[in-house]
Length: 186
Image (cartoon, rainbow, N blue to C red; front, top):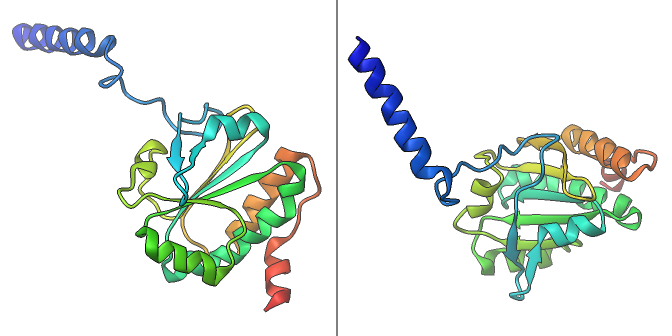
């Protein structure tokens, strides 16, 4: 029993020492509310680099990891309404799609997408933000601290309404009922 305990402790020390100075083996900081947002860079459809830390230096950012499935498609109008409601208060919205470029380009034109977007067919963004759920929305305050995370699909608009309320707090503006805005356009 003592030998087993000693061997376990020795192995833990060797593994710990072996990875302590190697950033490739050091676990990423947990992505959670109150933590600093991960270092994140991605190219937009024109090949221009989008750097999250540069965006959050200017103001809050809402990152939406999404796709063009029927649920995400139904939610898109609500997130476009969030973008429109708070962009003048400094909000930058970034949609990251998982479909191929050509499909996204067609989708963007068809939906008249009015926010910053990028394509990540490999799903690296989901790894960076430590989520497997699609869609996932991450609200990041100016300066880079995560203010809110909303995972899952809600085509009814209630989740988007909650995200809108969190954005309003972040930009110190009255909340806009994006669900009501979209519903009245229908």
